[in-house]
Image (cartoon, rainbow, N blue to C red; front, side):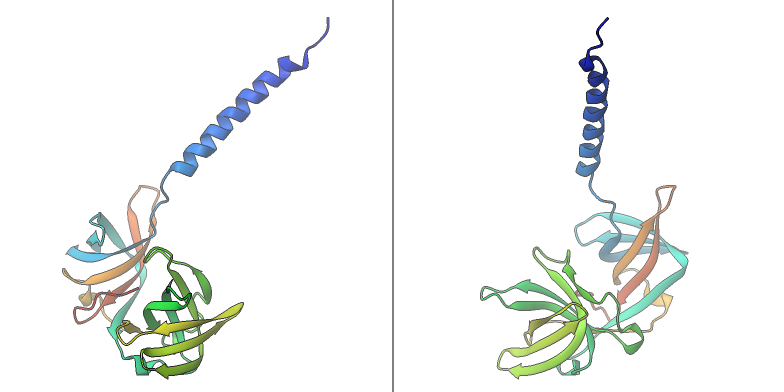
Length: 208
């Protein structure tokens, strides 16, 4: 009795269709957030209630080894040649990289996230963490040439661009009304654990 190859092929085709459907379904699921920018609404022990900038509510448990830093405003003139900075940029109409914000890392954070990558602060924004190689003052601010391991970029910083840096701070600054950027992970039980928080001091909203 002849054996038809299609007899064996049908189950394989069915399996392939099911697998493709599962992959497509997974691809359509929104990614689990790992960062929230928002305002602390309440503090209960090690639990923070946070309202994100887009209006979502988060409950974040602060990990015992959570890293905490404060963010304070500094001036454009505080950016020096040799400073290790992070700059969020968006494309200008002339093709320039216009800074939305610049944060200067303290020396003990030099090298953090070095490189340039897409960022989620604004549409088409890019985050570049690099060392300032040149700083040229102009009528409309400064143009920074920043260099990182795999390249370099010219960043235009206007006088209105927020410039900030990180400073040590205490948990007492995590209070209702404080503006924060919290990095967190999702635990097996579905809850969120904050592993790192940057908090704006003196009423500052972290610009990054």
